Length: 338
Ligand code: NAD
Ligand code: UFG
Image 1 (cartoon, protein in one colour):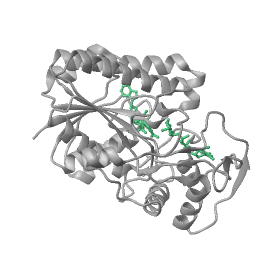
Image 2 (tube, protein in one colour; image 1 turned 60 degrees about the vertical axis):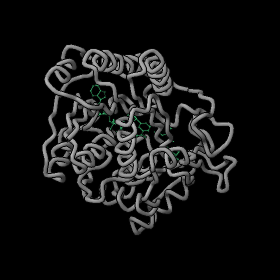
Image 3 (cartoon, rainbow, N blue to C red; image 1 turned 135 degrees about the vertical axis):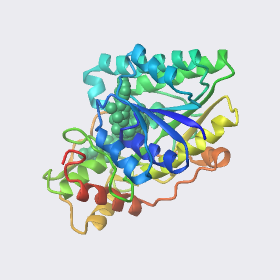
Image 4 (tube, protein in one colour; image 1 turned 120 degrees about the vertical axis):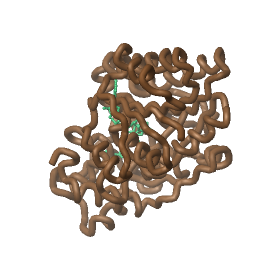
């Protein structure tokens, strides 16, 4: 069976993907410095899977430490989740973002070359499309980025395109995620944001559980049917499945490939709020607030290419996503910190 190195495997998307990898019979090695996660997520993953993960509590920016992972293991492929991801924080602390996201990736690529590991799935983001000319968004749309976080994603994509160009042995999947939400249906693992959440669904669940007073809906004057922004929300377990399919593609020897991982459906902020109210079984207080700088009116994927070339199709509905997000929050009001 193949061995997959998962950087950032203790994080939100990483933990769900590690669980699915274990369930599918892969051996999994995780490197994570827990800068935005908790070791408890991996303990629970192991408990759900009934299998162990080999964990290295290292920073990918420390190349000496990182090299031990490659020197001590035979690795067939890498899924690279490790990175900082808060857009607002990246505007305030750009160097931190460039340093962490770029150096960790450059170290990874040097080590992959040195140890002849040529299969890589990279966590990119729909943020690389900026404000798209139209929706749905296709993979060949122009790329524009508006903040340091987005720039790190685009720079890494560019680096990977350059590497693939000079070294055809590399198989690389650039996976552009839309808006991952929800949690594993068991309610044992889920999203565990530090402090006040920036993202919509964790904010709503924290209002529902009584930790926050009310949701601020950023803008009700967008050119959308109800005036609030539209996004492509995808269940984190569907996203995890997308990584398994991407690995199959890498192992078939695909060179560099790029896929949107979304559902193709757009939901407005108010539609998400109403789906959450149904799941929670009570109204969730909210107030309209001014637009949040940098937000675009509508962003949703064409999921066609991932369907045609990977066989990827999201299975979970917005109701499922709302149910599982609430189930996780309700069972773990303080996340992994009990
Ligand atoms: P997350 O913060 O929950 O997970 C990232 C993990 O990487 C954390 O466990 C963190 O501790 C670890 N990490 C960060 N820097 C590290 C370093 N230098 N060395 C070792 N470990 C390090 O985030 P997530 O939501 O699971 O996102 C995973 C990836 O997907 C990120 O690259 C993110 O940018 C990308 N992405 C996320 C979203 C989203 O909305 N969640 C959307 C698009 C893309
Ligand atoms: N929103 C609110 N109130 C909140 C939080 C969000 O109204 O308290 C709205 C936003 O204005 C936006 C929508 O809910 O219209 C979704 O916002 P999120 O912050 O949950 O998600 P974004 O689409 O802004 O950003 C996400 C990821 C980024 C990624 C981007 C594009 O968080 O990392 O998708 O893929 F870059």
